[in-house]
Image (tube, helix red, strand yellow):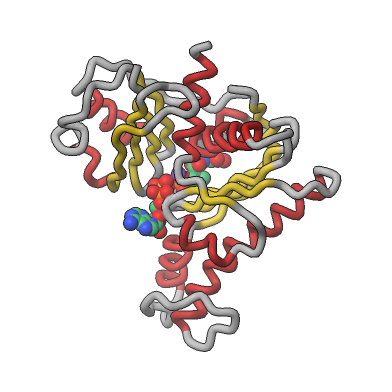
Length: 255
Ligand SMILES: Nc1ncnc2c1ncn2[C@@H]1O[C@H](COP(=O)(O)OP(=O)(O)O)[C@@H](O)[C@H]1O
Ligand SMILES: CC(C)(COP(=O)(O)O)[C@@H](O)C(=O)NCCC(=O)O
Ligand SMILES: [K+]
């Protein structure tokens, strides 16, 4: 009863093969590839995998990319299935004005985070932070309702925007420091603190909404490890958050 989980972001496709579609399942194989090389999955990374019994994925990289991945999935006799954000799923409700317009990765991460919250004790509010191509900072209340979230440019996009919009900001990567005294450090620190500042602000908003209760902060995404050291609030890095969410959805649907 193996289960293939796939997360297609704007930069990379991440996949993991689990031994079952249930929380606590064990990863048998996993990988990540840049979108430029997704057409090689069937002949490379997936070639020698045991055929998965089922799959579920989330895509925010567009229809064309999704179709290219479905072609790779033809390697196996498998029905491709992709999460479509809804008004509710797996015990989480969606407060977006138009629930289907929420990024599927955000929706799945929220469901994964809710699973971690409930597994860890009594219900409490949580911030779900994803540091990928873009940065998202999503708030879920004590009752499991997604109440809203922020979208920011990721670090790479911030730098490219500054490079292309100015004459004098084309410099090597710098260090994150409190009082940058050169252009490289100013850009690197500016980007990092823009992200941590947004997280801290959303943390305050959610705590206020929750009568002062401090939310659990769960961070994920390819560049999460770069930002985490500068975040001045207790938090956890859970690399598998999206996969955890996909497993939750699959398990919930299969009950
Ligand atoms: N070894 C790495 N490979 C790819 N991206 C990396 C790596 N290390 C850090 N990153 C950062 O992670 C981001 C991609 O993260 P990811 O979660 O895969 O994004 P997305 O889900 O948007 O595709 C890149 O923008 C980059 O800044
Ligand atoms: C915000 C995102 C671009 C994040 O993408 P990512 O950084 O994971 O590649 C994606 O979740 C998306 O396209 N969302 C749709 C719009 C929304 O969530 O409101
Ligand atoms: K993502």
